[in-house]
Amino acid sequence: MISSPSATPRRRAVVVTPTFDERDNIADLIEAVLAEQAAVDAFEIHVLVADSHSADGTLEIVAALAGQNPRVHLLDVQERGIGIGLFRGFQHAIEALGADVLIEMDADFQHNPEDIPLFLAKIDQGYDVVVGSRFVDGSVNRMPFYRKVLSVGANQVVRGALGLHGITEITTSYRAFTKETFLKVDPATVPWQEKSFIFVPVFLVRLLETGARATEIPMTMHPRTQGYSKMVYWRYIRDILLFSARSRLGLEPRTAGAPGAGQGAAG
Ligand SMILES: Nc1nc2c(ncn2[C@@H]2O[C@H](COP(=O)(O)OP(=O)(O)OP(=O)(O)O)[C@@H](O)[C@H]2O)c(=O)[nH]1
Ligand SMILES: [Mg+2]
Image 1 (cartoon, rainbow, N blue to C red):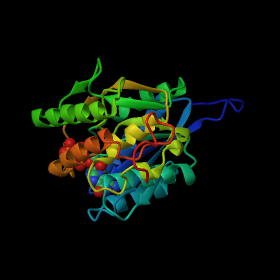
Image 2 (tube, rainbow, N blue to C red):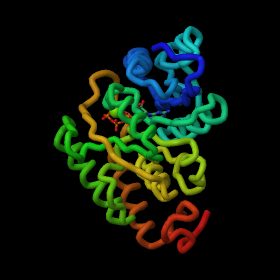
Image 3 (spheres, protein in one colour):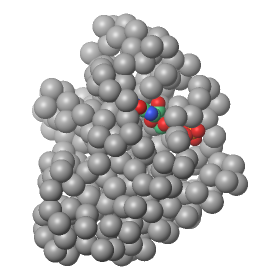
């Protein structure tokens, strides 16, 4: 892609992907993400792999690719947890890599990198948060029946507890948002140190509570084909139910400025 010297400088979009034991996926994923640059003009695409010190070779694969390509970055977050990987990854992308826009995406190809241009087009139109959804027209959900039940149930329970209207999908981790929106979220209101996947729905709720202008785009989701799942179902279901109950009782800290914020226990 050729840009003239007088063109507006491109904003930087960093795709943050959390990894634990993803050696069979990660090199292909990085290549697929960077290939989307051909379809994106307004943003310079980078990829940051936020790894929980995998021992399967993921770290070494990404370190080698980062040494060859300045748009590939590695953050070893040391500890386990998808929330730790993502939250530290977002902070690092802003502070060390100069990210203007963040994209949150799994590393196992359940999220299609070809959707990246659509997310960025919506950000370019002025949206603060863009959510990939399996529940809007045009989406395709190829997950097995029990996973569909889990996602529908979790979405209903959390959305009901928080009175979230307009956003249909809060349990899958494919989203784009601006740096400014991320910086409005108080880290103390996000369970980023929890080992379960509760980070994924709660983080989106906190982004929306900032008053962000949000929209959804349809996505295709299918089971992973390489590597293994790190989701512990009972722990996730337990945490979803606890979070929803605590939110209804006003016991969850909320983003400052959100409707109803400050009524519950803070901190
Ligand atoms: N940094 C980090 N990333 C993790 C951790 N656990 C999971 N991930 C990553 O988070 C993403 C989602 O995890 P998955 O195991 O695919 O969970 P899932 O998509 O709900 O489960 P499947 O549908 O079976 O794949 C993947 O990119 C994982 O590698 C962790 O402890 N640390
Ligand atoms: Mg997965």
